[in-house]
Length: 546
Image (cartoon, rainbow, N blue to C red):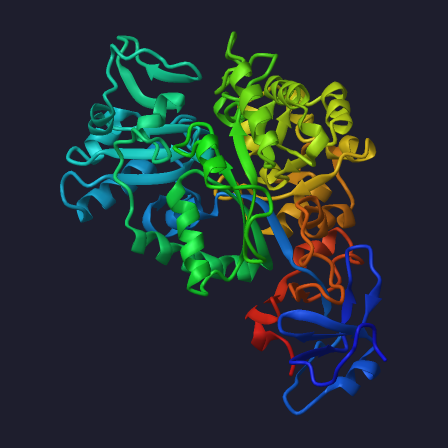
């Protein structure tokens, strides 16, 4: 009998495939599913014996099957809303300030005066002028509408005069701790606000002046966004929650049976209306929930992002003497929050992009004794990471959460902000792997591209726009694939999802080739044929033979 078979007539049998239990094997030919769970694996001839009158049989015709992708760091709620309701500059692809301003003017022409115009995913390095539009340019495009255009990752915004006035920002406004207001030669704000200077124009701040979206609009955007994940082969996301309403939306869709991607939540407890004490009062703890919606822990952001020269580093940015980035939280507050979260039994994910912020994260975790209850996660760590930081990460038992897709997306941005040697030292994946640090790969969408296959190619080849970043830091295809599948599941304590074993959820992806045996060159032709979550094809059912 095939492995695990204890009854006849499962709901679904997949035959004649090349099915990997994990990235490291073993490989089998067939798999049976009942009630969303894998109930048997084995050879095609064996599983044919389980075929009953109500069994759907699918002939994979030699196609390869692997565990589905886990995107272990997302801002999917915001990404879905952006794609549906805001100006999405990642998709629009402006190449100049004039392009951006024209899009704003088009939107203003369609909206009643006083309506807020919002956009996202801008970056100065992709514009010919090497800067974001200032308030006067946005005033000309939309004189009767407040405008707030967010940079990639929300670390900087470009605004017009109406938005600045609504937020109470003028020439007398002082830079807040952990933030910066750009000013012209006369001391007037240009409309460009960095990090904590923009919080009144950030919907995650309780004092925000930006109107909130309706519940109906938010949930409509999420439902549309799930389809994008299905097409990419993603079955599970680790979502960084900024607002209570975001968690509410996922919970409501779960209750309605419309949550079609497994969602794991990290609550942001700094620069957010979500208070750690309130989570404790509600009994929020790691592991609370079910297979579809579950709590993992909390997130704390320590610094900004290097492409906007806000990541906290030791060496100043290129042509920007004295600027070593921003720390968004005081060390004592960071240690206090980390220790409190640890006592409450919550996982901890610390956003630290530059080496100075990484050291602050490691100091806080060590002081709080968090490593004793791990694993805990360091998010990003892109810039200037050295052997000292890597060894401390290993000693503290941290999981490193990285975004190799940024290599392709932001090469020009990095080259504008850093000298060539520092660019080549971004994301030292091979060194970290050699030291034995667990590395999980993810997208940070909408801050980065979400397609796992593209990110895997970047992690392996380190090639971006025909140029190589850190040639010696590429990892193997299997290593990158592991970081997108079973490793994030095991690191987050999943017991049902992950490997394609008997008793596990039938979350899998069918490919048009064998990604673990193909050459690096052939990775470019690899594609998702079909995606199954909980035993049901959510994408590409017609793409597999029956």
